[in-house]
Each structure stands twice: as structure tokens, then as C-alpha cells.
Length: 363
Image (cartoon, rainbow, N blue to C red; front, side, top):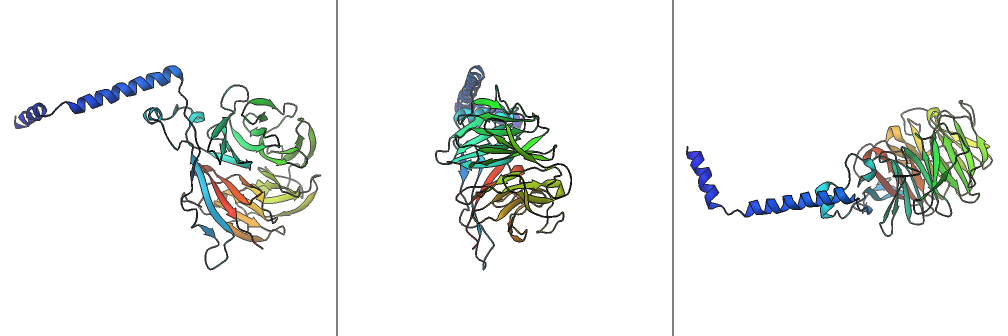
């Protein structure tokens, strides 16, 4: 009985301010939620680049001369959430295409301050302007809607090319994300990695299930192709990624042959390196491949959660990264791209982010 008396006494002595506040917030929440439901409120995207720890992570560590420096990462696409976004969660939680974060980035490309991210988990391509922080979402609805984008590049006109491995198509959009067309005259089995040769205006497409690489012109016609299934020189076993360096050298991650093969512009094999194994100079699951300004070849070893750097003779020069979610660590990384300033962009897929590093020079 004493407890009941205390409850009644406290209720009588308290002013009903809390009830009014709760009522106001509840009414506001319901009103805003109803407004969003009726007007189809969409989340407002903005790149939230994380520069924390950008000065302190280097490879190799002291006393060696550093060659690689961590710069920043991108995970969140909502640096300033509105009150409505806060209340209703910033989009439909059942629709990954409205996500305010990256989900499973698989491939990256960078040109003219625009970072292109093929996010297979979000079923879209995110284009982030690293100067203005503006975000463009590509392939989220209508013609050219994506299901599983795994490769992305852009040409001289900033047209965007996207490989969708589930739809077995390569889609083309203009610089504003408007669907233009696809390579409809080509029957891909599973298109995955993409690369762009600016000098020849040629799009390279890896067809993983066909064990082949195509060189396709901007007119959509096949200009060249090379590869077939096998483990011999110039043959592939489920290739995944491709890169073209400044000299026209085309390097392909021959994933289940556990090696990288490099070709000239005509598809002739120049050299190859790699074998299966769990040591640092071998490959577990080679995926993304790229080259820096000195011609060193970078290979993402997804199975070992690191990036390995080789010279053209296949000699391991350096590796960076390890399994984890701290800055500079990876969890099943996939694609990689190196820009003209030797910035290194890595799609850190299962950490839901893109990490960026700087090659400091090795000569």
C-alpha cells in the first residue's frame, strides 16, 4: 500500500511538462513520417570523408624509408543528417539503394575529382566528388537499373560504364547518371572487371565465365579479344579484374590460376607471375590489379586481406594491410585503382568503405 501511496504522491507533485514534450515529439514524428510517406522523401547524400589518422600510418615502418602512406577513407554518405532523416532512418531500410552508407564496394575508379564506386551490396554506382562532396547515385531505377554492379570506369567525356554480372550486361550512362545504352550486341556470360584505355578510347571487359578479355570501342563493337580457359600462357581460369597502365600494358588478375598476366595492346603476352600459396609472395585470391607511375604492379590479395606490390619480374617489393577494421586494415578487399598522382584507391568490401593511400616513390 505504501508503494501505491508513493506513486500517487509523486504523480501529484510532478508538473506535466514531460508529458507535453513527449506529446509534441510524438506528433512531430508522426507528422514528418506521414509527410515523407506522402511525398516520397529521399535521403540527402553527401560524402563524409574521414581524414582521421592521415598522418600516422606508413609502410614500411621505422626505421625504413616509407613508401606507402594512408590518407583517408569513405564510408558514410550523410555527414549532416536532417531531423527527418534522424527520425525515419534516412531512407527505406528494406531498400539498400537508399542506404546512407556504402554496403559492399567491389570496384573503384577516379578521374577529374570524381570517385566512382561500384557498390554491389547497394545495387548502385556511387559517384563522389572529392572537392564538393556531392554525391550522384547511378542505376537506382528506370532504364539501366542495376542489380549487381561489380565494375566501373569512365571515359574522356565522363560517360560511366558499369559491369553488372547478374544482368550480364555493361551499361552506359552520361556524366549525370542518365542511362544511354548498353553493349547490346555482345553476349557476355559474366562481365566483371573493367578498364579504360584513354589513348585508344577502348573499354576492356573481363568476362569471368568465358575466361576471356574483350576490348570494346565506344561504338560498342569488339575491337579485340584474347584468352580461353586453361592454365597455359595467355589462358585464364576465372579472371576477375583488369588494368591498363600509362604505357598501354594490360594486366589481368587470373584469379583461379593464382597469378597475374600482362599483355600488350594487341593481346600478346608480355610476362606473368604468381602461384598459389599463403606466403606473402604468393596468392590466395588475387583480385584487383593496378600500376603506379614507376611501373610497379599492385595486386589485391583478397584472401590475405592485403595489397601486394611487385616489380615486372614478379619480385615482391612490399605489402600493406592486414585483416581488421581499423584504418589501413582490410576485410576481403576487391578492386583497386591508382590515379595519375599515385593515389591508391582500394575497395574494402566487407568493411563497407573505400580506403585511399599515397605511393611516396620507391626510387
